[in-house]
Length: 115
Image (cartoon, rainbow, N blue to C red; front, side):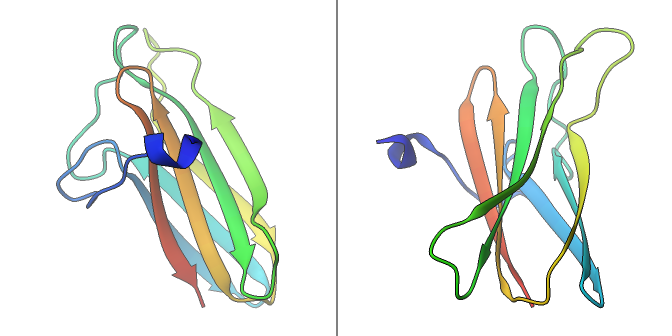
């Protein structure tokens, strides 16, 4: 099962866990997802974050909805940073889920509650 291969942890002590920060103004939600906020993640051709996804699961929803995906394709000069900003509109509460993929250490996840 895919869910058994996804790792998680405290982003303050694990550089692979995506950090989710959001602001909500009316129905507009701005979400920043980053990897390596406290402990920088390497960004080299040999070891890098390849992509980040953001999902939203409304409280009353049957399943999560993919908000967006960002791929980081350059790991030489100029270097890409594993950070992405997403915007979407909703009045609903629910969960924000972020997934990131490290080419060496696999899939990592985190979640926060959207109030």
